Length: 49
Ligand SMILES: [Zn+2]
Image 1 (cartoon, protein in one colour):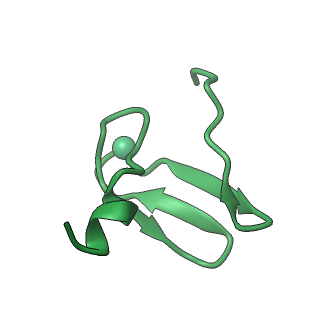
Image 2 (cartoon, helix red, strand yellow):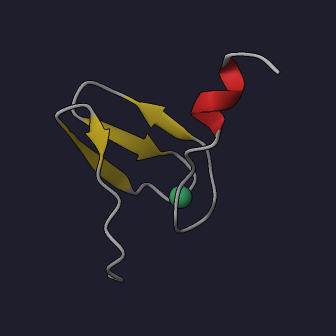
């Protein structure tokens, strides 16, 4: 419906929390996980820690 919706599709794989996009990574504030952003693409590895 609006432009905000597009960004909210991308959520944390661990807790489904909202991600905060920064220059080189996206951070989940709910579980403190961070995902690297390479060449403008969010890298979401499926590994478990
Ligand atoms: Zn999370």
